[in-house]
Structures are given as structure tokens and as C-alpha cells.
Image (cartoon, rainbow, N blue to C red; front, side, top):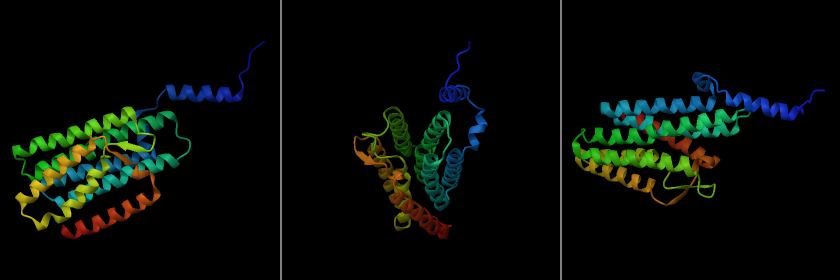
Amino acid sequence: MTNELPKSQESQESQESQESQPNSILSYAKDLPNLCSLAGLACTLLAIYYSISGLFAAAMIGMIWAVAFDWADGLIARRMKGRTGNDRVFGGQLDVLIDIVSYGVAPAILLMSYGNFELIYLPGAFLMLAASALRLSYFSTFGLAGGTQYTGLALDNNSIILVFIFLFEGLFSQSVFAVILYASGVSLAALNVSQVKTPKLSGNPINVRILAAYTVGITVIYGFML
């Protein structure tokens, strides 16, 4: 006599078996939230390219669109049905890796490029990058404080703020604004690793609409500067 398992248990075991055998690497690139993450990475690459080229208006557009895609991937992932545990874990890891490039590497290169890659800007760039790495590692380990708040300023705020600050670049000489940019970057890095509790802005539909309007507005303003 054979023992038959209930269908619900069979279904659960089948799903666990599928998740224990991961799909190919490229198969995860077809996941819509991951496509948004990769689109954000492309925007970040453009921001880095234009920062090095000295076309800072274009770099600002790339930076703010990277934030927009970063917020979009989370929204889409939360609303999609049928995603497996592996899909969620892979997407989370991809998001973190892209964040270090978007919010750590890109702003650091922006600072060094605006300072003509002089040695004095290297410590500031390192502090910005190191703070980003520490902040992301802390979040990956401990998550949200109380399930609702970040510990330290979330890294996406760095790009949102830096893009705004850069609007006033024309009011100052290059040497003076370089100091302002340096101080702003280091100050943001300090807030990133502080114990300050900040809300998760990307989870609020109102904030998403505000970011969308801000992104379009920034794109138009800097587009006219090109």
C-alpha cells in the first residue's frame, strides 16, 4: 500500500524543489523589477560617463533617473504575483549591488571630476564611497528599524539632494562650488552612517508621485542647459 501525500503538501514540496535548483543567470534578467534595476544601472553609467566628460548637466539627468528606476523596481516587485523566493532574493541582491554604483561610485566620481581629479578630492570621494558600502551592508544585515524606518539617511537621498544642489552651480566660481560639493558629499556620507532614523520614502504613493514630478522637472531644467 502506497502513502499518498496531500496535494497541498506535494505543491509545497514541488515549489521548494524548484527553488533549490536555481534557473540560469540570464533568466533573472527577464524579471521586470530586475529590468528596472538594470535600466537604473544604465542611467548611472551615463552619469559616470558624462561626469568624466565634464558634461555635468547630462550627468545630473542620469543620476536622477537612476533613482526613479530604483524606486520603480521596488514598486513593481511588491505588486507582481507569482514571484518565487529565489526571484525576491536575487532581486534584492541585484538592487544592493547596483545601489553601491549609483549612490557610491557615481557621486564619488562626480566630486573628483568636478575637482579636475586633483588629489585633494580623493579623501572625500573615498568617504562617500565607504559610507555607501557601510550603509548598504548595515541595511542588508539588519533591515529597517522597527520595520518602517532606515537607520541613517537612505542613499537615494544623496542623489536627490546633490542633483538639487548642482542647480546653483552657475552662481559660484568653479573653485568655490567645488568646495560646496565636497562639503555636501562628506556631510551626506556622515548622515548615511549616523544613527538618525529616517522614513522609507519609496513605499509611499504620494512620495512616488513627487519623485516622478521632480525627475521630469530636473530633466527639463538640465536639458535646457545642455
